[in-house]
Length: 559
Image 1 (cartoon, helix red, strand yellow):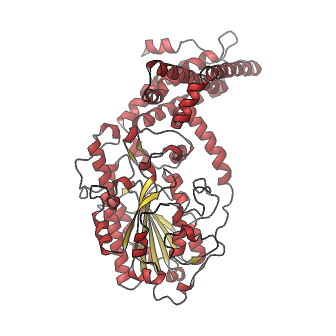
Image 2: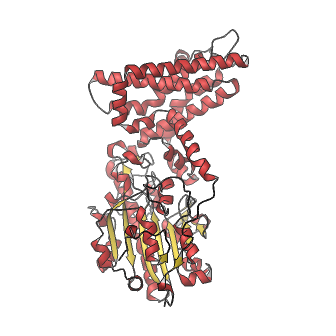
Image 3: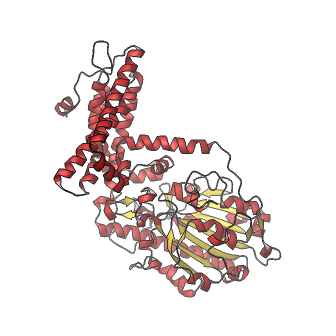
């Protein structure tokens, strides 16, 4: 390694010295390393596009020079004595981590992916740790980090240092401009036809994503949310109701419709729901599109008054469905078994399973989804009694099929499909074992929904509530199709496995009579195109909340 590092990174290279070489001597070798070694997934993807060897050579050479020149510009702007070492080290580490996740899972680094990373929790981080990650980080970052911190740095006067930094940046920019002019047609065609490649240019992708995230989201974070449904009030069904309504919204995680038994999948991943469907009151919706490809986007969008086309997939500037329901006078409760509600439940009563210590359900700081049902009667009884007497909307945010450690999402006693993948390095698993592990999570979701429906049916039978359930996944998942794993691909070119999600509804006979909504009518529309856009207005309609923001054309329960 010492000989290799000496050849790539000459030993006596100074950031700046009165008699020594200029900053570009330190910048350019590091930029070359990042462009070549730090972009292996990018070069693999370009080679995988096929074509004549001569065409591939032109693309690789042109794109490589663009990446090198662009990285030189970035590093030159950072080439200040007290800034360069920590900044360059950070970029090297970011490039190393990006290399692993782009190579292992086919991920791309865009603003939404970075936002998802920022809002992750310890459980998700733990699931992503692996020997392969450590190996990649050492391979990509080990040599340049050793070299960066080994080099002595000497300072120049401020003006001279500025000139040298600017000179390096200009030279790098000239490389970018020259290569762009010489290979414009091929580069433009490549980026136009394969847009995901622009989010694989490492580490410039992370710099762009961080800048875009800060520009787009930080100003919105400091603004007060705009009120929604200030005129919200309960409709005529509440005037002399015999029983209050109780609606459970189950927000699923990473369930894709392609493997959903009720939607035609060959395997019995939803046997319990199939029995409920046979009884007549459960309806499965087979053509539902998610608002995003990750939780950070999809969960707020699900509850947003805005459709995706109106900006529901961006950082929230408005209150959401739960605010409107609470303003109308209903009791609202959010229970979480995931990485949080992404701000949706900030103004309503909420709790997480992290506080629970349930033998067999909660171990190692993580709970199976059945823990959400523990003590539900007591939790509802603790809500404001006047609101509770009018009606209750309960949101259960599940762990569902969250990867890559799918095997951790299901109890040992509930794994109908074996053998299953027990690694979080998904590419190391046989395709059949990976699908088995994922399908087990759907089978467990089926069991969890069966338990929830039994609880709701008991409530209805006891005459305490008119009950209903809506289950809808936040986004889907890739299981190796086209080299992609997990989720989070930018929506514009995301595969259907990440955007086509399952959805079911169940209404007790009492709630059907109260609302005038019949399961037969819903079943007749079950194969129509729907999306996350429908949830906000469908819940308002079902709960008979009157407000001007309600749009009947987006209410799937509209009679």
